Length: 367
Image 1: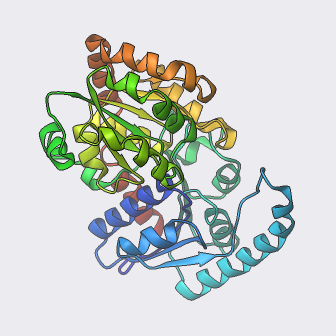
Image 2: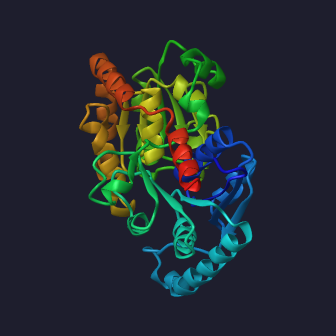
Image 3: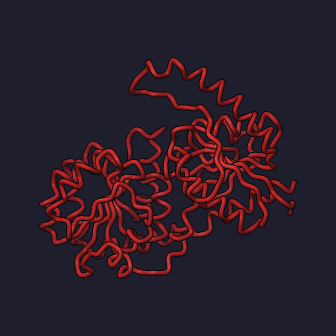
């Protein structure tokens, strides 16, 4: 093993990229004491705030993605791409990494592309069951591609694939407390069924609007609700739930997600790779409402991989207003289905994905 291993972790954009990246960093620190780590993200994105909070240094690139909603904003895109490529080469020159890891997100491509051009070993971490365009390109020259799902040979060279699972936060991967602790943390009634509604770190418009519109109908089922709205919907949801504050707890973002999972009996969620990896570990019956505009509609592919194992239910985003609450009420009263989901989720859980990836990084560095 090389002393003072130097590793760059590039990517971000959402919690679904950032939390796995941090988990890999922590695993590297456990397995290779003295490792020197540098994160590279996109300026203005949430990694620039959240990564330093975890105690790591991060450098931001001037990089944005293609804006489908406002085509005029894309006029500067070629200049941003060129600038980020130059910045990426500068970061590599200054830090001199032994290995560069890409976890997805805007900053991932320019950094790994520059590393591959300079002959620096790279590792791609593909979280989804349908690989993105950037990772498919980067995977051709990467030393290894760590994936969260089986049957990824259609996207990457088979000899480079390693099924590691997706890294989750250690506090979730090795949760050592139960439902009572979660309920007490939230100040909730342990005797009531508890619903966790979560739309990813940025929230989910269709889910939020459906819960908002049919809140009283849900509460008539004698449930209590943990509702993570994301920042855009937070103020509206807080006002909406004000008179039910003993039974509906509203958050813009839940930092201690392990406690929310512990308290929950049933979950409504987007189908990002991180959410799926966490829900397999905590084994909570779940209804997925995939974000339909994710690249290559990968969230639907992610959810379907669990539906095929009778480990989850799925509803299309456009069907949520009419069908979500009815499907939820049906699941609430179907204890046998809840138990079946729990058992099948446990079978799909991988709790040491972070260390599997870290060991591969150390192996690559030693070659």
